[in-house]
Image (cartoon, rainbow, N blue to C red):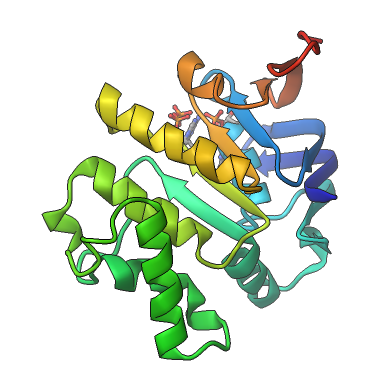
Length: 232
Ligand code: ADP
Ligand code: ADP
């Protein structure tokens, strides 16, 4: 199946001269795949992430996430879809500073009709899976950068989303901690999670199955990294 599909997507910003931030992008993200997005500043990476993350709608074309055409949804429906079908991991972790680790991870489940004990149990299980079973009551400021990003990854996964979107997820981490986080991405990917990672770092992108190179709002090139595919 397909986790996310973009078809002839154009996103135009009209502040003075119209800017086509994305200009005719078609892309299928298969369930269980691991895709990296690279491209220079201004090439459309953030715009693409915002569309896939249901934060915005295309000017032309369609974006389908978890089987729903994002452009046809109300703001409220989009918010709901985002909450269940998309997990976000940010460079700056974006944890709630006054909630402890397990509360942070449990947060995205508030929209779900699951009772409090079950939410906490799911959150605790995910924290165990990212190696933080002994830190569930710690506040974000009591955790290292790498541990914070593990909490963020657990939070991204808690609703079993169609896709995890990560924006420079290791940009604030030292080399060893980066490797640990990327190993966790690999582990969840092997377990079936669909990953989409924006990065400037070639070695981060190379963890993926394929790299989409954006340039001036268009897909310049798709580089297949696994098997005999080669680049196209
Ligand atoms: P990165 O890809 O590491 O986020 P960028 O330089 O591409 O770095 O963008 C940094 C931030 O600035 C992003 O949130 C992006 O949306 C925003 N941005 C990029 N280009 C522009 C621009 N021309 N005008 C305003 N904001 C921009
Ligand atoms: P990247 O993330 O690769 O740096 P962006 O998606 O942020 O690229 O930007 C793509 C193009 O769209 C840039 O020319 C940028 O200036 C423009 N752009 C992005 N966001 C906005 C916005 N909110 N308003 C106007 N122009 C924007």
